[in-house]
Image (cartoon, rainbow, N blue to C red; front, top):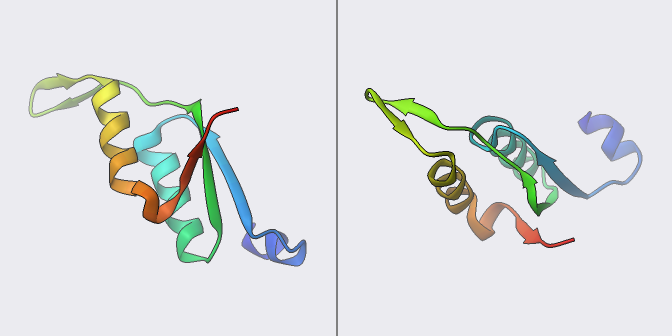
Length: 80
């Protein structure tokens, strides 16, 4: 994929999808490491409740914590 993007002079990626704590996180970090500028579209990504240490962690806290960890260093968020 990286080679295809480079061959087409793509330097800015817009990322959306599910499982923020896995796919959005990994994609944004990898794209950043490869030198791409990244935009996330608000409300175009999601995750799910997870179990940790025998307790359920609500998806809204997972979502916020991963997006906070990515922060402005890795991406910008836009509304459409």
